[in-house]
Image (cartoon, rainbow, N blue to C red):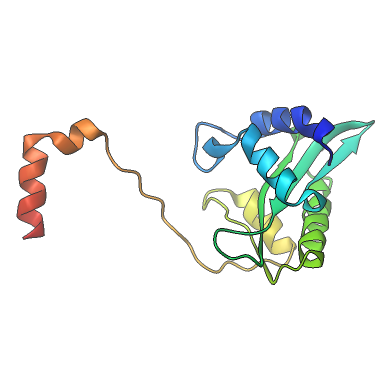
Length: 156
């Protein structure tokens, strides 16, 4: 992947990810730039007739784990899904991350994302843990007098 692919990769992501839903809501130009800047050899595109039709973005470190790689984004245009492109892209990123010194490679996948979970398993990943993401209510809800009384009473 080169910086010249960035506009097409952004567009593919906008088409295949539901950016109104977490974790896809974090899809942005900066998500692409971060991976491409940190680990360009782990970022790849699949081309058809010279145009990108899919991509993978991965890099190190993952959170505070300096030797952990992270495959964060894989997107394939619908017309090109089912052709093993995601498998080839994922494999290329895994190889690049291990060659860069990764001791572990992780992927965080939404529980409801069946296709990505199948892909991860086909690449040799095993599910280690499931995390539930909780979202706080609105500030107005927290400030209601009834809520303040309920919270104090229930914590006693």
